[in-house]
Figure 1: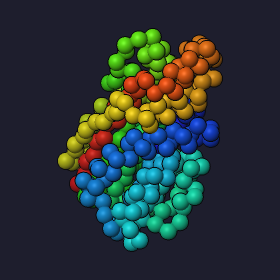
Figure 2: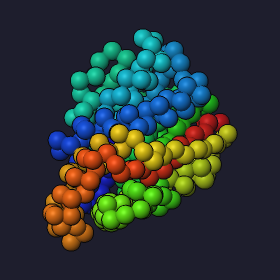
Figure 3: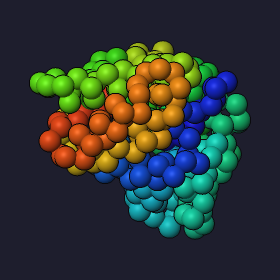
Length: 267
């Protein structure tokens, strides 16, 4: 969840203290979706998996459970701060830039990336490298956000608290776009997988509208980008304080951008 290659740096830096909180919330929100797809793709004992932009340990650990002691999970990221402790046994953790470095050695039954390519400047090259790393018959599973499809933090904009929340979310999107994020990338995944030569391409989408994890994610995200929101004139400190207080009440129905999952098979 953290591969990136932009001139201005990744907006949600893994080195910041809020990163671990964000990873936990993202895992709670999206791990069930990811592993529903992984299981439907038949990932099982003895298989080899490449987790691209692993970020946090939950997905590599879940893949390791499925492939067992005779399988292998390669977890890569340009920043392995949060995955170093799981290196060993079935899991190998590597520092790696998916758009610049050769794929890990060997071929894979599954290559997976979640909330990664939206942040990568050379997405086309990264996708090409992931496809080339698949064995014949191997599966690529890409899951990425599409803030353009549903741009609001509070889809039910019923009062001033919700309007403030949506204005700050607009500021967050502006910061992402300034760093090269493609806010409409998720919807392109099925087409891109077909254009890459994959077969049996399918896709679906998921986004929660109300969840305690959404509130945790929002609080950590805003705290992480607070100084940038203020520096760019997108919000004042007083507005951010008011928004965080509103989030803490638990009375806002907070959503995420849709996460689109697309998968296909290499011939």
